[in-house]
View 1: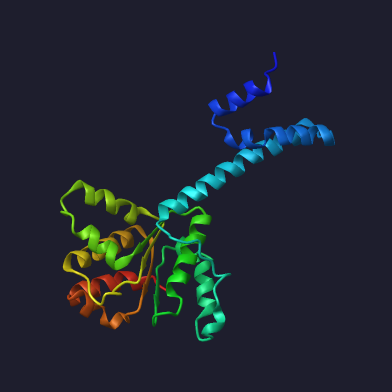
View 2: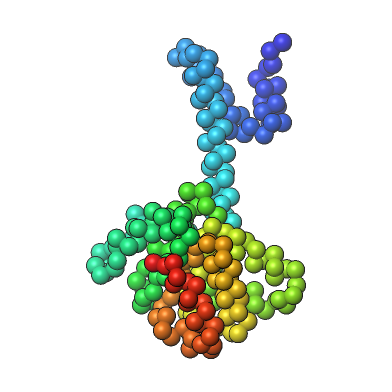
Amino acid sequence: MSMSMIEIERALRALRLSGISATLQTRVVQAQACQQPFLETFSLILQDELDRRRSRLLERRYQQSGLDERATLADFDWRFNPKLPRAACFELHTLKFLAEGQNALIVGKPGTGKSHVAKAVAYQATLSGHTVRYLEADSALAQISLDDPAEQRVRLRLRPLIEADLLVLDDLFLARSIGQGAGELLQTLVHQRYKLKRSIVVTSNRVVQDWAKYLGDTTMATTILDRLMHRAH
């Protein structure tokens, strides 16, 4: 015995097929009006469900990433500074570096668009199915480092930062220096991700030659830079 439309809607909710539920009546009318073959109609209905699930998955990845905007290179004004390495930025946007487990250091003066480029690359990564974590580096590292490193909470907070396909550390050393705890945390993140061949994008106003000064530890700076720059753009 065939089900009524109300019963079908109830069944779709029970099966969590919200994509089909949202467009079913439209598809039925369309099929009747165009006399579509059953398989063609059925394939469209299935595609509606796949599209809804993909859209929800992309939105969930974006929300989990920590990004505060859906930046793209298409909406970036390249005319304000013709000296910007446009080709290099678009090369990062292809995400080839991510597939190869490489890093990217975007270093330059304030107001040159470093954060926009990093966010655009990160957003493109979410659209391509990668897990991303974006941090405003100084404040995030300082906040995490305040917790007792032996606490389970710290390990739980570090796990997604270590395991994500891409980690973005934006505006590192914006405050000129970070505390010892934050520095040690940075070293841990870089080292663990290096072992896993997971990519990091760092933006900073500070040239790498001065990082030891901002960390307050030459050995730590050398260790961090060795791992960041071994496979880096």
